[in-house]
Image (cartoon, rainbow, N blue to C red; front, side):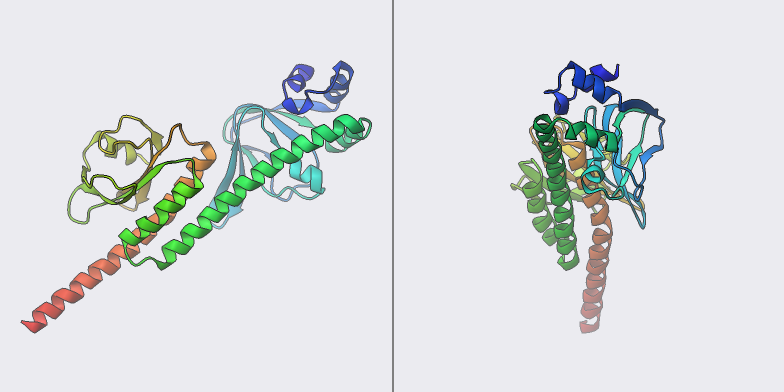
Length: 296
């Protein structure tokens, strides 16, 4: 079974039968139960891993809990950075569901590669390409969050917030359009704050099935939402008293899990900004009313 699994991994496509047998001798497949850790941030070790089945999330501990950095799928390589750098693990590898993982002993893998200089070069270059791609995605993720945080800190209105954040999303994600809706202060409806490109400004009742689905707190894809034509992906902005708003995105296909995580994180960041801007708006309205009464 180990040899067959190794044969199916593109990284080892150039290995012959004997080499695959030798690699299988330093490998194992282990089942991890839901909620278990493959390794923890700070652990030492150079073993590399391939996800055989299930899901693994790469996450880091933060003050409010954990931040998911990547979600791995069948066949994905992980743990390679510690193999290259001979450094402690930089994040947790967490199993949110039962999964099977193939691991290769790090030091034995180094010895295996040293005996095959030509083939090892190809394997190492492929591993570096995987790491490089992952780092580029991480850079995009944190750059977008940083830019979004800067925008949120300087906006004076919801309109300004939307007009600056929506282009950031379009530039960072494989989407062609974006819109921000927020709940009305006075009616049970959701109003369009801004859209790129511009779209018809129509309020959406809070009782529609589409809004009720968003209120469950889960983002989803749907091509047939008539209330927001042309959009495909919808991410809720959760408030303390229910759905505060949502972001709608247009894309040709369903967003990758990493992109869903990015949009979800931005939605979590937006809610306190909405509250703050609306509080300022209400205070301004009260101040103007007082001035009018004083003038009368």
